[in-house]
Image (cartoon, rainbow, N blue to C red; front, side, top):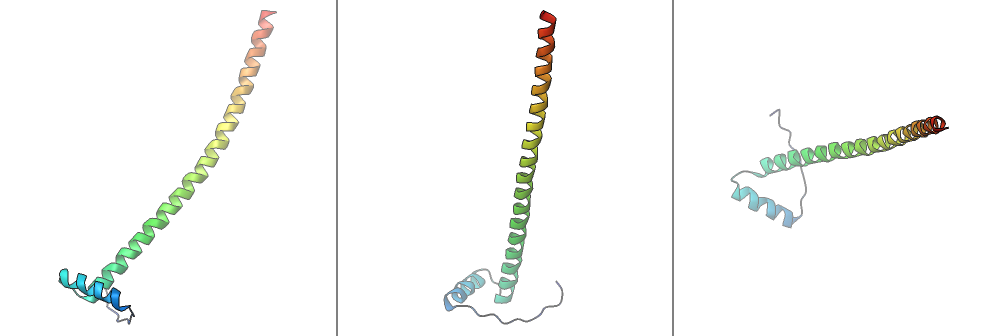
Length: 92
């Protein structure tokens, strides 16, 4: 860990009591608790951001895939129509 900087934070009494209970149970201190809580929060935020970007990418790809499928379906229909026309000409 790099150089430590001191900060001052304000907490409501009930939150501080909960922190102190956990700190006591885990045999650590407030500073370590706050550091770990901040790290956990930052990791979670990053996961959410990555998940949101992936979701957006999947949605964009779904739109692209739908447009491609429509284009190929239209091309297949055109090929089918031409094929059926040629078959009709052979029957004459």
